[in-house]
Structure formats: C-alpha cells, structure tokens
Image (cartoon, rainbow, N blue to C red; front, side, top):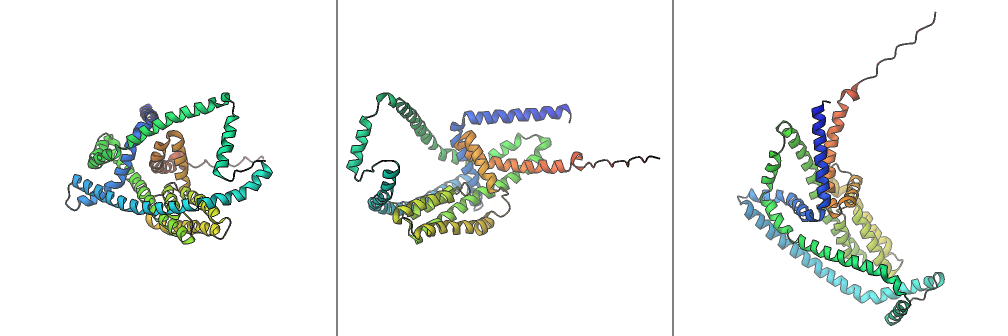
Length: 368
C-alpha cells in the first residue's frame, strides 16, 4: 500500500472520528433532526407514489400529512376510549387487588422481616408520619441533592419536549427537499469512487428500508395479536398491554418481554395463580411463533440480513454511547457496517494473501 493511499485512509478515519465526536457533543440538539430524517426516509416512497398521480411534491406532502393526522386521530381515539374503559375497570378493581396482595404479603412480611403491613390508608399515613419524625435531618442531604438533580433533569426534559415540536416543520422541509439532499450528498462524492459509493448506498437503502418499514408493520401486527389474545383470555388492561408490547417490539423481542411481565402482574393481581396466567403466557408464545415463521419472513424476506442479535447489540451499544440518539442511528449504522464489511470480506477472500498457497515442502534427504 503506497503512502498516498495510507494518507487518504488516515484522513477519512480522522473525519469519521470528528463527526462522531460532534454527534456525541451535540446529541441532544441533533435528536429532532435525526427523528425528522428517519421519518422523511420512511415516508418518501409514499410521497413519491402520490407524485405519480400528477400531484406536486408539496401538495403530496400536505395530502399525506392530512391522511396521517386523520388515521392517527381515528386510531388514537379508539385506543383512548378503550384505554379509558380499561383504566376505569382497573380503578374499580384496585381495592380488591390491594386486599389480595396484602393477604399474601402480610404473613411473609411479618414472619421474615418483622414488619406489619398497614390495613388501611389512614394506618399507612400514620406509619409514614411516624417514620419521618424519626429521621435525622443530617441524613436528608443526599435526598436534597437528588431532588436538586431531579429538578435539573426535569427542566432538561421540558426543553427536550419543546424541541420535539419542531420535528413536523423539519419533516416537511426534509420531505420537500429529500431528492435535493440526495443530489447534494452525491455531488460531494469523489468522481473516481462515485459509482462504487452509489452502489453501496443502494445496498444500504435496500437493507435499511426493508427493516424500518417491515419492523413497523410487524409491530402493528403483533400489537393487534397481543391485544386480541389478552382480551380473549380476560386480562385487565389487555389492549393497553398488547399495544405497548407491540410498540416495544421495535427492539426485537423486547416487546415480548414487556408484554409478558405486564400480563403476568395483571393476572396475579386479578386472579392470583390460576389458569389465566399460563393462558396469558400462551398468547405471547403463539404470537411469537406466528411472527417468527409467518409474519417476518413474508414482510421482510431475506433482504434485511440483520439478525435480531445484531440489532439488539447495535441498539445497546448506541444507547450506551449516545443515549436515545444512539438508539435511532444504531440500526442504520449496523446496516452500513454490514454492507461494507461484506465487501471487505469479499476483497479479503480475493486477495493474494488469502489465495496464496503454501509452498510444498521438499522431501528430506536420504542418508546413503
């Protein structure tokens, strides 16, 4: 490898490190931008199809926005009504749940911990007041520090929520100028390597597009399957639990774990250890089998090529490095790495270093 090529590789590595450092330093500020870019990437094919109907791009975006608002409002209203009904039922059954927990937990707390669980809210408040009066004020300093830190985090959260309000504005401009942005990126590619880079970008787009759009569809189907199954079993908050589990499945298998935990808690509170508990588990088992062998293969096929383990590891690494922003860019980064790593492996297998055969050993000389 000549010195000029080594210098170019070094410059590229330095640029990548600088970009990563900038993303890390400004990760909170860049979050709305990345969310808008991800949404623009997902919705651009829909806008392109609307443009095929002889609509201008701006008109297509506005029509898509109106349809999206209508669908989200309709589905949100239905889910809100169902969630409100289930919440009312939960509130009505809550005294019975608490009484059942108290009956089960009181003997254990008294025998193993020497604690008497209050039977009424007044007893609980009196016990809490008695414990607070015995606290040494000097021991409250860590608590005050925690509260101060929590206040600062709350202010930061409010600022982050306000920053999310600009996402629809950014999304509109990104969608309107999506192809111009693509052309801008292409214009900065070196002419000698442009064809190679564009071919790799197409591969990344095939992998990433199949995953993002396919995974969202899988989440919706699983949310409906979970909800229907838990309703049939009779678990309280069935629709809420089912849809939460479906949304959480954006991280493969995480939604299943969330759903099983929530359904287990509700089943134990409602009926204790009964037939409902294994029935709720069976709902998630059956839905997982349907997802693994029927839903995902038909929706995503073999175009994705990102194994669930790779996706989970990428999301964990991204969350550890960049927080929520890392979660957003974890899968795209994994898709890019996969495409270029595959190319690197092919080049390695075609290299003389890999194909070079060992020289045959000369036979040992025979002694006379």
